[in-house]
Image (cartoon, rainbow over all chains, first blue to last red; front, side, top):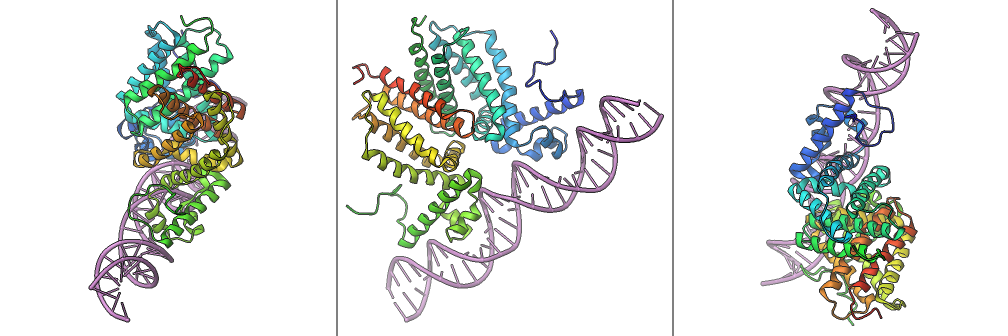
Length: 206
Length: 206
DNA sequence: CGCTAATCTAGAACAAGTTTCAGACTTGAT
DNA sequence: ATCAAGTCTGAAACTTGTTCTAGATTAGCG
């Protein structure tokens, strides 16, 4: 298989090799700074310096800090999806498998709470100008969830349930990140919302 | 009844009359500016000017823009709760009543989408330093939902369901505000998540 | 009334996101 | 190899949230 082309949107003018490298350096610097101190620690001047790129160039690649962090999240999500694909969840019911997948993702985020903070805050703070990118993250998340459900073609009802699960996922993460909910609390919320899946599977829950 | 004391946290030193008036002017200016242009339009210098208060004073009352907007939300929530109390929802099941209540709130927000934008963005962007205030908003929301369910003492399961509903509510609002979901979509999501309530009411859904 | 501590004001100053600009460097096509 | 168009750089400037300061005002109290 071609080692390339796995990345994000294949639209817009194709990047040269050096441009691709710059983009990579920027995303790497962003993730690194975010891992240290979260949203606030990702300062555009520092990202520029760390990635050896002029500030103006950084802004050419990512038109705002939010764009940058959302792109960072897309990047991390890809990793995550790859990792999750390798060992599919073991639960009996679809609800269990989804909950298991999300809890696995949650544990991954716990290992880098500052990075999680930066990405999630950016995601929910994003305004209309970032909608396409945020939407892409959302679609990717949907794919991961549907994957873990093991569904080929979900019903509209099931898609609604998945959307609600995503809502809960994002919002629960926020309450955790801002110290208003414990890890256990998040777990309960995830398990609770996942019950909606069984509710929308009239054929039984196996 | 005493016409006073209905406001927020009755803790900390009591405010003099003029201070109470200042606080009110500030919140009013905040809501007004927010109604115009949303989060970005609430600029601290403008709020200070509109409310005839020095910038430093504004910061003494509300230690950050986020604090100010969250307080604005608390303020609005009180109105809302009062309004909702007057005409309780008519639905048959608890789930229907909660959905009806939230849709009513949603329609209110649609009348002032910019204000909604400012408040909701502030709420989800808030970091740990605002946790107490955000938590208060969350509790107030919980009360409104429990009220509409007509429950005296909810089970832990039901409280979980309510938390998930709140998650969905906030996150769905965000997707709507950032133009990634339609009004219809939000409605569906609310109705979907409200089904969790019936799921957690083993005694039947009347 | 007159004092003292707390509060308020005007305004400067600082921090970080964003924009702008002139000049150097790359790229792609001839 | 050469030229035009597009890109990158370094640095300054601008915007808006936040902090700080010195001096006026106000509130509570003897």
